[in-house]
Amino acid sequence: MYTRKKLDISKYFVIGPENTCGRPVSEMIHAVVDAGFTCIQIRSKEVGARELIRLCREAADIIASAGKSDDITLVVDDRLDVVLAAREEGIKVDGIHVGQSDIPVEVCRKYLGEDSVVGLSAPSRDLINYAKTADVSGIDYFGAGPLRPSISKKDCGMDEYGRIITRNYAELTELAEASPVPVVVGGGVMASDLAELKKTGCAGFFVISAIASAPDPAAAAKELADCWDKA
Image (cartoon, rainbow, N blue to C red; front, side, top):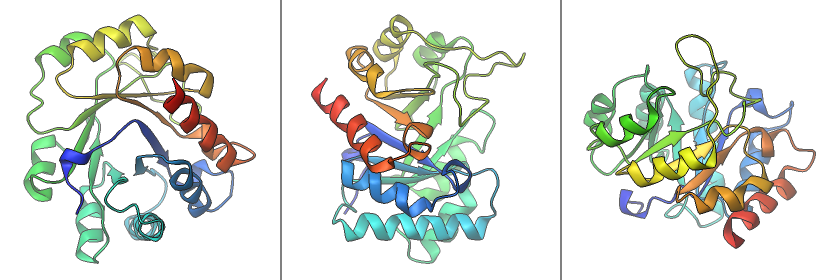
């Protein structure tokens, strides 16, 4: 049985059909499951609820076939309705990830229950102070970044003026020290970044295009996982 206490965000993959260069999402999920990734987020701003539910089922089935249903966290970006509908169909979805302008954390927690995972994107502005002062009683982790401008998520790190605010390792070290919950960092992250990123004390990294746009997603996923584990 999966529980929030087992949450591991060290190797976190975000995926939707618009990210795969025309290849099946299942190919990407097989790649990261086989490589030892610990968290998968289904995210799409282009497809409807039914397709997202189908992707959740596909991901959950792949995870189950690998015998990792109790070890890999499966979450959906933003869509509380999709999480609830998927669960109604018997699909094992462990929780949700929301942004600052998405459905409130307390609503997610109310409908998903205390044993579900709820992640929150940290704001671009005033990041460190926010981490120190925010009410984190309803969340399990912060998502932060970008390390550099993201190819797959153009608004990653965008402030209210449309500027992309990137993060350096010193800022991420301060963030990890200030935050009362674990922090996962993404946005342009590459395998060569992971040794320095791990030194910051952040709990993990998240990627999209580093795997989903790679010529060989399986090899890319393995390289990323190995780099993090060996750092």
